[in-house]
Image 1 (cartoon, rainbow, N blue to C red):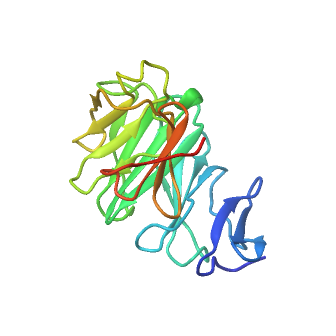
Image 2: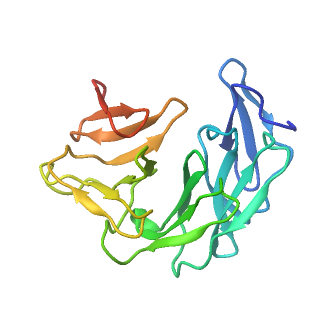
Length: 219
């Protein structure tokens, strides 16, 4: 067992009730000694947040919950989010400064709930659910923008000229579709920034801040 996540190392899901520590130079280092008090894990942050915290998403019973460690995995605080009325498939956390968003999705990325924190995840308040204006599904991670808005994408199934990009100016309560943008399939956070997959259907795009995207000539 490994006590903490070292500098430059990452966490990965390693089966029921297990998180593994990986290194770019050493490969799999070992299993993290302390597992967060979640009944199931369905998402692990690809990198620590800006304040060094590691986030994990999952469930307590049938309800979505998040766990955060501010001491490199030595201990965990669990935050239950509340009932969403459907089977939870994923709970993903996106952060920018003290702002944190927990997005709960079900089968097919169905939007079940959005929870917002203004105190680095100490408390969460529900700001959105599967109803109201906005995408029926949110694919991958949301991107908090520097101007306070929230960027999300729905699975790419429409005409590319219509676009599947969505912007919220009220912390996920409602969304407005950003039309005439390229087709996109899913956004994933990485150690370096965010990657939009299936960009123009066949490519990828990269951003550090969510505002400026660079098309990557890979497919």
